[in-house]
Amino acid sequence: MNMVFLVLWAVVSAIAFAIVVPIALRVFNWMTPGIDEMAELKNGNVAVAIVMGATVLAMVLLVVAVTLK
Image (cartoon, rainbow, N blue to C red):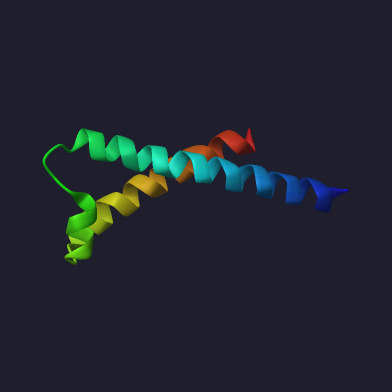
């Protein structure tokens, strides 16, 4: 029975991540006008990659905190 709940929560978390991460990236793009983050990533800008990675990580931590409650 616990295995079923584990699989269920894994599916719920995966769906939540799939919804939250693109929204977080859109909000991040909205908050930084004048900077094309995707073009900077393609050019190899490590600073932009670190900031975007931290943004995604923060959103994932929020989703984990909500799903564990």
